[in-house]
Length: 336
Ligand code: P6P
Image 1: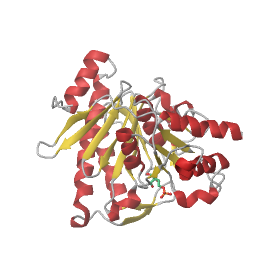
Image 2 (image 1 turned 45 degrees about the vertical axis):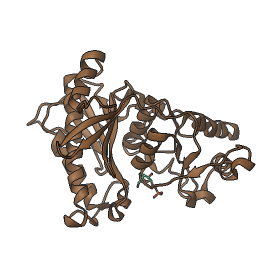
Image 3 (image 1 turned 135 degrees about the horizontal axis):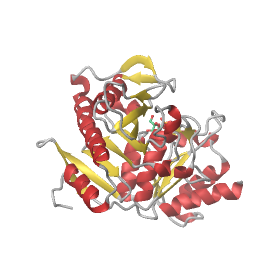
Image 4 (image 1 turned 120 degrees about the vertical axis):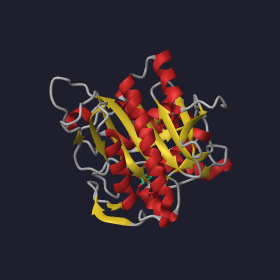
């Protein structure tokens, strides 16, 4: 990929050739991309800026917020509130939705985001990222409410993430495959560096937090035990393990070279369906993975088919190389 295509040109071509992008959606995506550049500047300051450590506040999840969690959330809200492309926003860092105030026009789109995912890695200089999901507001005859956000992930208009790592890379889908844009810091612009990304159907790499092994359900334990048994075991091949504890980094690796990512339900908090959030973590990542030829389930059901009942609903996640996800899902169905 070397035609040096900018994000704007990619979006204009998607708009012109495929009709998948309306002008307000193009404005939305360019605004989010610009906000990610602003977040990258704050992330890259590290100890040189007043951005590390905790903000001494808690979010709706009861988690202590890092300063950069709050900064990233504010950057996304401020960048998107005035453009007229959005009706409202939802964030991991906010208890309820943020409706576009009356002083600005309201648009037809809803933006959901985890402004800075993996924030436990901030202070130790490991890759983190911003995850976003775009829905269309389905009810035009009244004001926007939280119920407008409770749509299954298959109804997303767009989804993506920005990974703040050795490179700053924006990964995006509007339903016509997955494209990757690398930030050219000299120009301050996003340049298309991969298009029509494909996840290999098979892999030898799995990503899971092994310290939770004693809490897993049997199908997960069976799958991982077989991976660990290697070529002498049922799988007849050796596996490798990766766990960055930053979903964006793990998913980016899988989009780049394959793999399977699992954050399954476990019995530590049995009332919780999983750790990861459905609307602004699992859904956007599942949309990207499926658009790249991979698969994403909660162990038994396609994630994008799940109809949410709450804004901050959690879900069990198995996603990545299709043949491995299918195997894990088959083990769950056999166990059921
Ligand atoms: P654990 C980050 O906090 C996150 O939400 C995901 O990005 C990541 O995959 C997971 O949690 C890591 O969880 O329990 O391994 O720290």
